[in-house]
Length: 344
Ligand SMILES: NC(=O)c1ccc[n+]([C@@H]2O[C@H](COP(=O)([O-])OP(=O)(O)OC[C@H]3O[C@@H](n4cnc5c(N)ncnc54)[C@H](OP(=O)(O)O)[C@@H]3O)[C@@H](O)[C@H]2O)c1
Image (cartoon, rainbow, N blue to C red):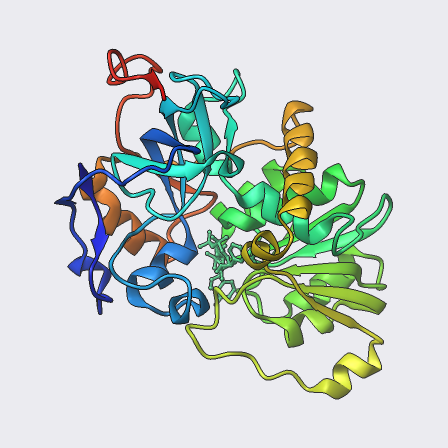
């Protein structure tokens, strides 16, 4: 099959290319999936270059790049709840490939009203956002206010929608008018961080009090503290703006705000407590079925695995809002699957 194989860390994303490798081996309890779409996430940028914390331990060459996908089940065990031909979306290392093998827990059926491209754009992001904001961590409740940093990005658009579904009002921080428009289209208030005094604008929008909770996937805790309510929480999710250099926070500012700074790591939680992850997915799928999560697919069409390096570069250059999605094969559940779909 065709795939983007990382056999060594690349220095430049333009060094990536698709090659032909054997299809992945599949244990009897796994699903073999024909990938129709793969999402481009910030994690993929880091994984290609060995710059993610997981690259020290969990993810090392050789591996197939890509972490989120939608596709069609090719093979499933007789006891599986998924039938061959079912459209699914989910996460798993190796999605920049024509086929992927994953555990059943890593995929969900694509809602009837969504295309595979749309489901792929939601991928694992809504579950990560729910895990961080929901009962297991951020405990966001009705009537609270939530500030989402990196609000136009893949996790950002999911966090806006999850926070609203939990009953919060949301202010999203994004860079530029096109990205602000995305934030507003989801029903949140928006602030442009390219404006020097964006924290003052957040305070203005919250009647001077600041917000109860900050969702931070970019690494801006100290900036965020300026618009946090006394006793509020900052959820540390990622470091998209740090370029590998971690933020050093003046702890007196944490003390002065009586703030709770809480790290949340979906992958590690899944490794340590799979039952909690299953509960998060259940709640996330309930929000999806209630139409509270809308996919936000970036406007440019990226066709074929050969376009992955360009799509990654576009993410790196911050051209994207929502999720960039690469189409890998035809979406129709039977095309390309006919004659191959089997029960093991
Ligand atoms: N904790 C977890 O479980 C978990 C799970 C998945 C991902 N993550 C992490 O979450 C982060 C976001 O992932 P993603 O896939 O959502 O990324 P993404 O789609 O690329 O979005 C990143 C966002 O960061 C913003 N950004 C980048 N540089 C910035 C800067 N200098 N100042 C302000 N904003 C900046 C971008 O906004 P503009 O374009 O508007 O600047 C963009 O909206 C990554 O660090 C990833 O590793 C964490």
